[in-house]
Length: 89
Image: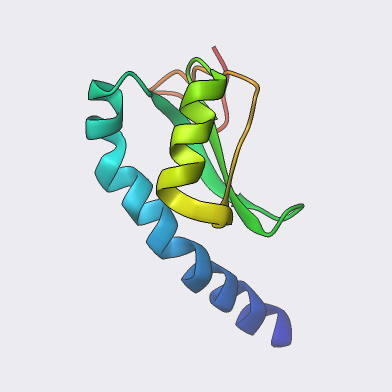
C-alpha cells in the first residue's frame, strides 16, 4: 500500500513539470530546441529530458527556464512515432 502512495506522490511532483514541457514543446521547437522525450528519472528524482539534437546552449536554456527539477541528458535521441514508447530510431 505504501508503494502506491509513494508512486502517486511522485507522479504529482513530476506532473506539473512534464505538463509544462508538453505545453511548451512547440514553442521550444520554434526556438530550435526539439524535445524528444521526457519523464521521471528515478535515479535523480528529477524529470529527465532528451533532445533530438543536444547542445550545451539548449541544455542551459532549459535548465534556466525549468529550474533544478529537470536534467537534460547530453545524449541526443530521436524517437519514431507509431511504435511503442521507448523505441529509438
